[in-house]
Every structure is written in C-alpha cells, then in structure tokens.
Length: 130
Image (cartoon, rainbow, N blue to C red; front, side, top):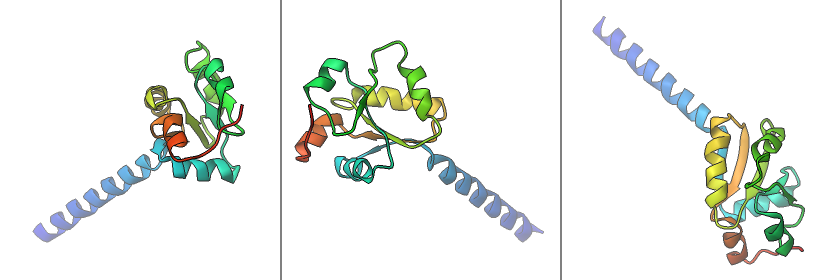
C-alpha cells in the first residue's frame, strides 16, 4: 500500500511537471539576433517594429511593419497577432519587455521579442532599410 502511494505521488508529480513544460512552451519569448534573423528570413513570421514612426523611418529591419508602442491603440492593434506567430523588436529591449509581460497576460500564443532590440541586430552586423 505504501509503495502504491509513493508511485501515485511520483506519477502525479510527473504530470504536473509535464503540464508546466507544455504551458511554458507557449507565449512570448526572448530570442537572440541570430534566431530572430532566421525567423525573419523564413517569411513565416510577420516582423513588427514597435518603435515610433520617426525611429522606424530612420532605419528598420526589411519587411517590418510599424505599430508604435506609445500609441493608445497599440494593444488593440496587436490583438490581430494573438493567435498567430510573430516577431517584434524595439530599440533596446525595454518596450518589447514591457509588451512581452502584457502579451503573456493576454495569453498570446506565439511571439518572439528580439533580445536587446535593434541594438543587438546592428551589433550582429545585420542590415536595415529606410
């Protein structure tokens, strides 16, 4: 009987562990510039620049669309990406980090923020368009 209880407890623990891993597999995650470039180049992920229009016009990642983080309608515009994969970036990672917390609260399914923003993209030697 004691062995049966131990076995049950172990199986229950493994089930909770498995569920935790499954839950953490969804949501918005932070990735390196190299991983971000691979996703951008694949054409499978809309690339969203959450900087201001002025920053965007000064130079952005090819194919990116601009949805300004500071605009009141930012989160309502981002709702269009709630159930589909996307990648996004800002200048340094501050705005994307704030957005990431909110996106995860809003239960976004799959998103990827560029670690340290476009600064890391530039340091990696990747190009921009104007």
